Image (cartoon, rainbow, N blue to C red; front, side, top):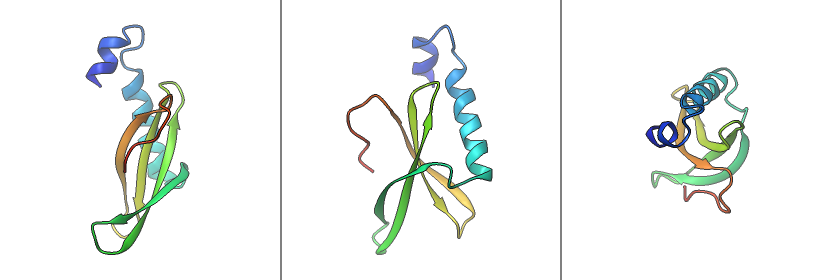
Length: 89
């Protein structure tokens, strides 16, 4: 967030505002993001479905998983949508 404020003086609060809106959306619609990948969870042999949601204004992807047992969303990373490759999750 500090990087955004320093390098985007015309809209220093845009990233925080968009991230807050995305978190609120996922709180009510956890499947809003598109399926991205599946990975193993903590060596237990269980699969975790990773989804991603585009933050349009800031051109960032929010990568997350839904943990229905704990009734929570786990954010794994935020990654620039312009990058030519996705994050190593």
